[in-house]
Image 1 (spheres, rainbow, N blue to C red):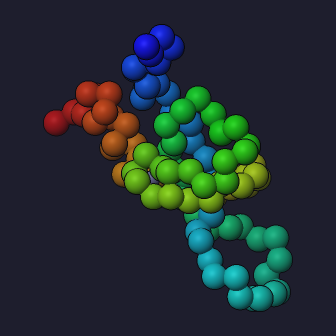
Image 2 (image 1 turned 90 degrees about the vertical axis):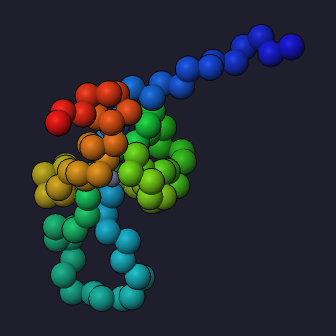
Length: 95
Ligand SMILES: [Zn+2]
């Protein structure tokens, strides 16, 4: 008796989030609030709800999401694997 089971996940909805490189927590003090290295990954869903810290990227990596700064959006490059996977799922891969 499954009456409310959405059988079609919103696989076409994605959102992008900057993900800083996972650096070991060694107290490398000194370079303060500089530009963080990282990659903008895509995630399936409508948006980040701000609750789940661990999310799986479209390219299959589990990362910790965090508040992002506008600088992250500018400085971090888009993940090519995520973009390729989105296009593949959507059937928009061009030869
Ligand atoms: Zn990715």
